[in-house]
Amino acid sequence: MRQQAVKAVKNGQTAASVAAAMGVNIRTVFRWLSDFATGGQNALLAKKITGRPPLVTPDEMRWIAETVRDKTPWQMKLEFGLWTLSLIGEIIHRQFGKRLTAPSVGRIMRLLGFTPQKPLYRPWQQDPVLVEKWQSEEFPALKADAKRTGAVIYFADEAGVRSDFHAGTTWAPVGRTPTVKTTGRRYGLNLISAVSARGDFRFMMQEGNVTAEVFVEFLKRLLRGAEQPIILVVDGHPIHKAKIVKTFVEQQQGRLHLVFLPPYATQLNPDKQV
Image (tube, rainbow, N blue to C red; front, side, top):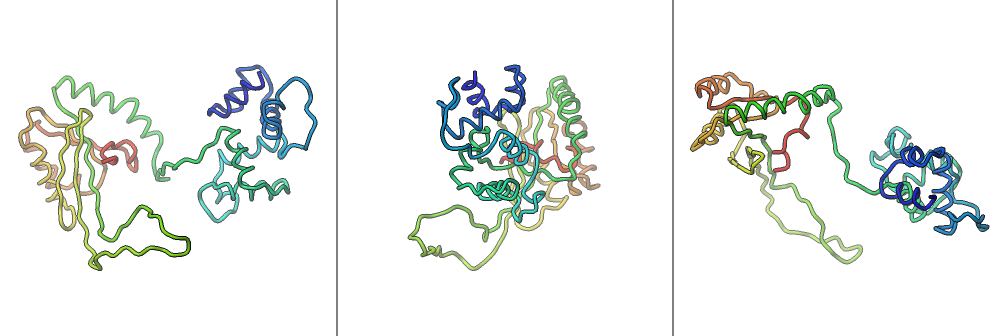
């Protein structure tokens, strides 16, 4: 039972859910985790295992899990916004006076069911009530309307590409940072694209700013050859709501409808992945 509990937490279940499923106190689960961190599988056997004292106690394990899960390093008055093993080790030292190595902290975090992950960024201005309403009410109604009218739903967005943006890494000798030769000129290119759930894709490149006039040109290209009415889902950028855009949509006599996402809800737009 102890081994199953530890395995469940390591696989991503919370200590609270494991405790509830097994009918034990949550502190008991954290005690098992603490024993395992110190003595491995043998420490979970019924017979008491003697040896070195645990690196962290059950209560300390619980505090670490809750702190890393529910708070940011900034809230703990640290200078970086993402949790690293060194920062977790720092808060353990501050709170309990214990100095643990990075590998030891890593073992504790994996035991608690934590893994290093790339975080999702969400604007603080985002309204979760509007997002939930879109997901549970508005978009299902939009899909039903598209099915009734035979329309296809597209999601559209704009993006910029800069020549002086560089990403990626390369191997090089220690202490000798490599140099990649590139042009000193800097230029940008803007893109507009739209994608549907069934894989239809349209895009347009634009030198210079994307204005309402440019967006209308994209709408014309999107409609070209379309055999079904189009419902285009976009964000609330001013160019999408410009008078020239509204006039163009009205002139299409039902062939084109614009629908707007909740403010700052970029995760609802699959074209962002494009």
